Image (cartoon, rainbow over all chains, first blue to last red; front, top):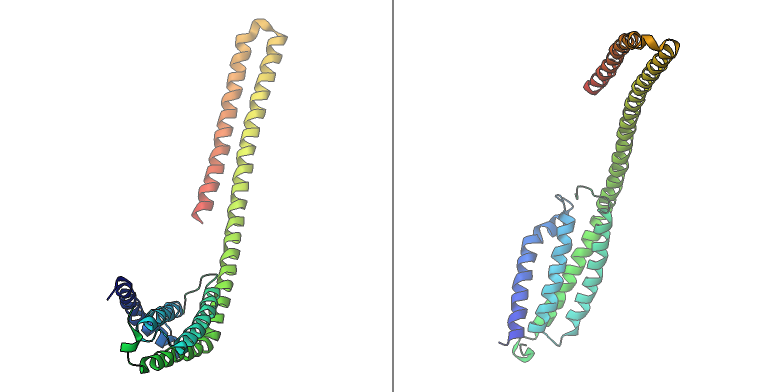
Length: 96
Length: 137
């Protein structure tokens, strides 16, 4: 294992922890029973998924274009979701 | 970097499926949270406007009080100035009329000033009482 792979694995572990920690918020966002700032945390959850995807694809399937396509599509949607959530909280709000 | 040839080929499909699954999930959140997020924005803007209006009302009230205090202070100062001017004019007139009775004139003016000081103190006390009464409301 070279240094780059080790760093990549460290990154995966770190973002995996983030994803696990924030997965509940994403679940509540899907079900509609959100607590305060669940949508914010859902944003970070999907960013964590993107990081896991982009890091992980180098390890498990570096030549597979189908993962790239899916991850790029997901990144576009995440960007728009972040904009939507940020706009909703532009004047404060309790985050529900 | 890990060699892809030693990895199971199916992992690419699994990864892509997972990514598309996340995409669909986020799309569902997008649709599900569309109205709640809009409500958060509308409510926050409404609260922001209400808070501003409340602050403006409070500031107007404070400004009116300060204006009243200022006018009262100005009235007291104007009265004091008028009193002192009147005393000085009277003293000068008395001395001009009879310079030999200057000390008698001074005594008259001193009595006149004592009455004025009492009136000024009463006026200042009334203004202070009004301020205390208003701040207690």
